[in-house]
Image (cartoon, rainbow, N blue to C red; front, side, top):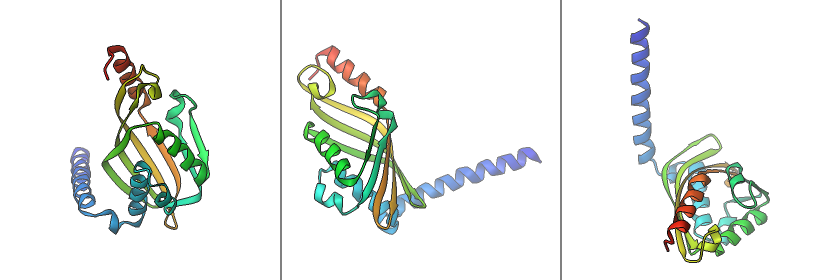
Length: 176
């Protein structure tokens, strides 16, 4: 009996996950106000649309990235819309390109969760490498809290170990 119940539970979870994935893929962010605001926030943030970004940011927005402890100046913990915009603007100005692809996204209550693939490129010096253009691709998870149509919290967990390994490999190979 226990094995049958366990098997039925596993089958339910698998079918439930498949149907949720299909239904979430079919549901656009427009049908989910939390996911809609969070998606606009990310598109504007990584698109450098600073004035439009302000429209979906709470004035008291709090950005944290505990995984950035591996990076110079980390871990990043910044409060206030203007301070967060200044930090992201300054970092984007030193890069030649930046972007992201969403592998998976969902919302739960006030939170939107994104499994992301980040891509960026810039002068090697920005990454602590010799001169020459370097392209980096890394994985990360972004969790955004949305209240009253604005992002109030931004939490990143990024694989900076992989970023540093890519920089070291490209710096060591002399790759442009």
